[in-house]
Length: 224
Image (cartoon, rainbow, N blue to C red; front, top):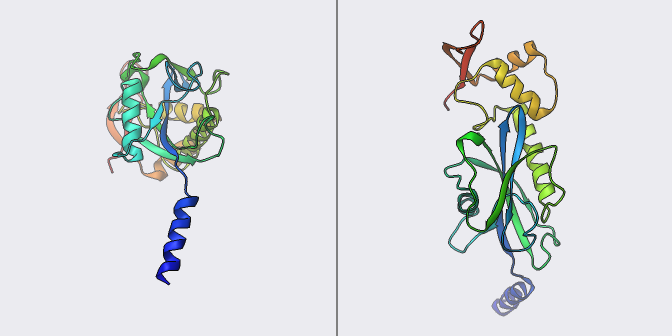
């Protein structure tokens, strides 16, 4: 029985294969009522003349989350950014030379809080409108962006997921405007506010926004 089990273990090892695991982070920003995605071109590697989302290979001492934070900082300089997992991609033909499995994450940031600078191995970095992506996208990153955007839209319908897209304190019209641009729909003002209050996630600060006639009330997300 033991010998048979050993033979089975050997067969499992023979049937196994090596592959690389990467982390890709789809970073969204909100500028001038437009949802944008951060893309870059690397100076090295496959598809170096193509636009890609920030990403890189997980090393032996890292978790995938560690890898995501590492490559995001190395390629963009963004640090201490909250990100959430979207999906794992394991298609056989993702990479032209070897087997690569990637875990995709998304992050929501305020671009003015994160000035863009060229980092090591990056030749270009730019914010693109999510509905006006460049044609030259590397690997399957067009699909990654599409799936991450859909994930954000789905989350937004179920819970308030705005990350850094809004200031800490915001008005209800600003919040509705953000929802409308991300979901690409026109929302009824009364129904939208009713839903927000039913979710019990907003807190009235008791302050009004300065510089606007009527001084709309400022809200903030309740602390967990």
